[in-house]
Image (cartoon, rainbow, N blue to C red; front, side, top):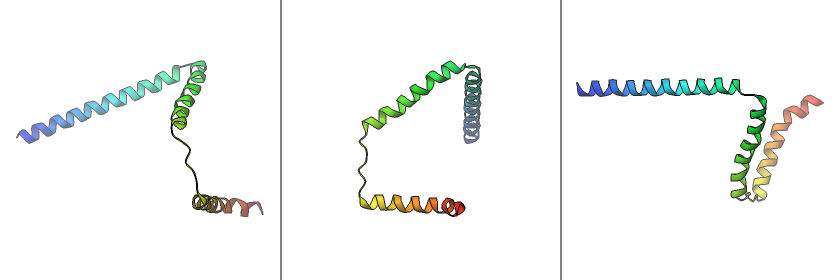
Length: 87
């Protein structure tokens, strides 16, 4: 009996959480649709800056000859279909 009540409470809690998340997501989409292009143009540099800050904090990985060989092979394989179509 207690297990069934607990399960019902969990289902209700999850349902309310799902409805809340859907409501917040739909409200966010509606607000995004209503914004002007000026605010979107301002948001782009801010987001680029947020991405650039962690890149500066971590050093660039050093590639050795084996890494370069694998990348070269992958590039060659990925470009093979496009090269054959141009001939």
